[in-house]
Amino acid sequence: MKTRAAVLRSAQGPFQIEELALEEPRPNELVVRMVAVGMCHTDLLPRELPPEAFGGPNVYGHEGAGIVEAVGADVRSIAPGDAVVLSINSCGTCPTCAASRPPYCYGMPLYNMSGGRPDGTSAFTDAAGERVGSHFFGQSSFAEYSVVAERSVVRVDPGLDLAKLGPLGCGIQTGAGAILNSLEVEEGASVVVGGAGALGMSAIMATRLVGAGTVIAIDLHASRLELAQKYGATHTISGEPDVLAEQIREITGGGADYAFDTTGKAAVVRAMYEGLNVVGTLGMAGVSAGEMTFDYITMISGRTVRGILEGDSFPQEFIPHLAKLNDRGEFPFDDLITTFPIERINEAEAASASGEVIKPVLTFD
Image (cartoon, rainbow, N blue to C red; front, top):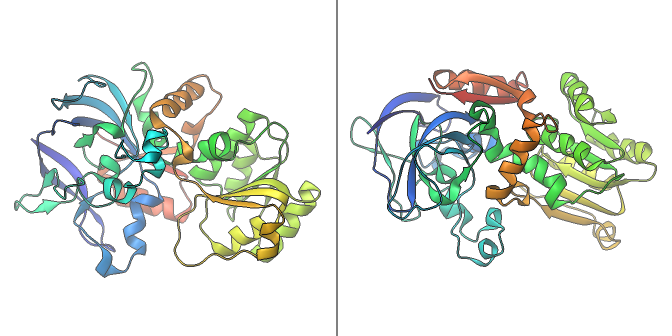
């Protein structure tokens, strides 16, 4: 079987649209025809790694939505013709998977970011017969057709618009899940969200769902801060990190109950932490490298710092829940989407990087 796919052949090079050969699905895999796939920061992590660390060529994409074309011999939960959203892969047997916490699977890097199946094989080969990496987050959905791990597949209502649902697999569920699942923000609580991109905006929308009180959005783009107010932010701030903590304390009257970072910028994270009240909680989902330090005394006073992956969600339950909320108009994440055909993937990347677009979604004819 042949498929069009966006292939990244070097860390700093462009995505290239190529025709690849696609293997038949193994017993625990499916073939999915993609309708739409979100692009987010995780797909671009190779840009931030040293060139020697790049393991390509690879097909990325980890927020797919599409239609099941074929299933492997052991697949029982999904059938051809099902409408699906694709999310994180996991082993299914480790302690965290057994506790329905697949984002924290002990084998998370192996099952999601190793450039192939856990056994090292790939489902893609190029025109020269050479290996191209597959199974990024169990799916490699920057392809018209892809072989997908069964545990990455979430069945959704076939009556919903799949073109809107692609981003649910990672960024949208992470932002919403941070508020609803990870931090368990309660009615009336004060919340600070660092970064008003797709991840942060989803979190802001979720604060409205729980009836949070003071909601502060931090971003450098005035247009995004204006949009954040539309979706639930009661206050917006922008400026150098050294003044953010004071602004947060002033707005909240002593410090925020919760803070959620999507920027991955250490100075912003530290300012948000310092803007918490003495028993406040900071959740971190922004991806970065290097060290992050917190003052020892302020931590033992009662504050909590925790990392967040995929919004602590169980995708097979949480994604359909968010899709229903969206269908009812209560969680309008699709307002953030700008669509690009897969052939314009490099334009989509540039628009996202510049801040022109909040959530690029790639579509397939």
